[in-house]
Structure formats: structure tokens, C-alpha cells
Amino acid sequence: MSIQIHKVTANIGARVEGVDLTRPLGQETAAALREALNAHKALVFDAEGLDDAGQQAFVRHFGDITTAHPTVSAVDGAPNVLPVDSEGGRAANHWHTDVTFVLNPPQATSLRSITVPPYGGETLIASSAAAYRGLPESLRSLADTLWAEHTNDYDYAVPEEDVDEEQSARRAQFTSIKYRTVHPVVRVHPLTGERGLFIGGFAQRIVGLSAGESRKILDLLQAYVTRPENILRHRWSPNQLVLFDNRITQHYAVDNYDGRPRRLHRVTVAGDVPVGVEGKESYVIEGDASHYTPVAA
Image 1 (cartoon, rainbow, N blue to C red):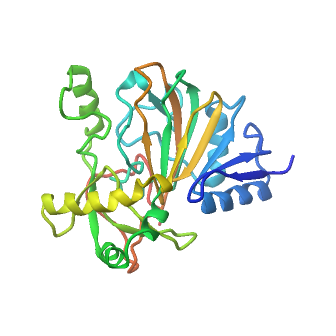
Image 2 (cartoon, helix red, strand yellow; image 1 turned 60 degrees about the horizontal axis):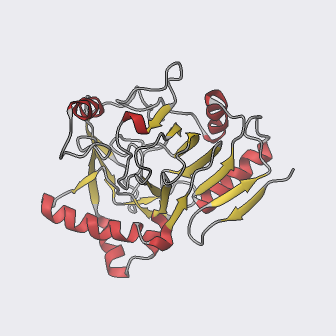
């Protein structure tokens, strides 16, 4: 069967048919999917019969894969697979780009549905390229000059208020190695040349500004990312895989399923060091993430 790609929204998302993820991809198929990912930012596949090993094999067509997470435990026996499980804590119901607190965050993220609640539990994925295009010219010019500090010493998955002992333990694990990295607020995509707002929940402070000033500017820019027109709202079905470009998207797990079981498995593709509009690269302030993803020479 030939590949069919059906656009889902104007700004982000496409459903892919005609690809058997349980089998190795031919070179032409892999190239077509990479092109589709560049164009649509997020791709939805049927993944009947796919297991952890198969998910990792599929994702490797897009590059080397990372270990599961810099600080959070992997699936037993699968060090490159992160369980995203409702039983392991609250949903990540906060807009974020994966692991931006390290120097070279993943270039792409794959999520595979293992257990789907009877209702709710959607994943929202937003195009930060569309957000950048939507900025007024004056605000775009400002954003081009800004850099932001990203840190994991701010846990999007466990809010500070009303935490119990178990949640405190999870937070302690998440921040067991503290990371602080400075990235451009506007990142240039290394393949397409598109500019996108590279912020999200781990971006906590604008370089050179106070915490209060930073929050106002970050909230203003973030409001463009989360405009409904820029969002794909994916309602999970069993045996699906979603692949999205982590360099130019943000995502959010909707916590609207009454605590019912929900489990996804995540595998991420190792990424490059972000580059800003002026060609300067991100830099580390604190934390060594080489055990998670080495930086290419």
C-alpha cells in the first residue's frame, strides 16, 4: 500500500496511512515520513502489533534515540522507553517541550498508546512555528533578541501546592540532578529554516530580566503558542503512535479522565544544540546530561 498523508488541521498534524510500523521502513518511505514531519510537525499512525522494541526500531529511522529521561526511571528492561502513566503521578497538564533543560533536547518525540481511558486523556500539540508567524512584527523583533533559562527545578508534573509524600518523592527524583540551560527564545529549525518560539514550562526566566518581568514576557509569547488555531487535539485510540517534532512544538496532556488508567510509552530521538536567529548556540549553566543524550561533535 502506498503512503497516504491526510492533513488534520491548517497549522499542525497529519494522519499517515499505508505504513506498517512493525516492519523496517524502506529508504523512500523513511524519507517521505521525515519530509511529512517537517511539513506537518505531528504525525498520527495506527500501531497495531507494535511493542517497545518495535517502537524503538521505528523511531531510529529518524536518528539515534536517547535514554528514557535524565532523572526519571525507564520501563523495566527498556532503558530507552519512558512510561507516561497516570498511576505514576498527575498528568503533565502543563504546556512544555520535552527536556528543554538540557543542552540538546530531543529532536522528536514518539508516544504510543498502551492503556486508553474510556473518555478524555487527549494530548494537545501546538505549532510554535505558527505561533511565531502570528506575532506582530514588533513583538517578533523583540523575541528574536531574547534568551531564556530553562530548568527542571520546576516540576510541570507535580505542582507545589497540596503535594503528598509520594508526590514529594517523585519531585525529588525529577530534580535529583539539577539542570539550567540557556536557549534562544526563537529557535531556527535546522532542516526547514523555520523560526519557532522555543519556550514552554521549563523556560523560567529571560536572561537579563527580573523574574516578574520574565514571567510577563513569557506569558505573552506563550499565549500565541496556545491559540486554538495552532493546536492539534489528539484523542487517543488503542494501538496508536504519535510522532512530533520537539524542536518546533509544545504539548499538553489533558487531565480530564477522572483518574482512570492511562498509559503511554515515550521514545525520543536525540537532538542537536538549538541555534538562535543570529546563529549563536545554546549553553549550559548547570548539569551534565551526557548519560541521557550525548552532544554531537
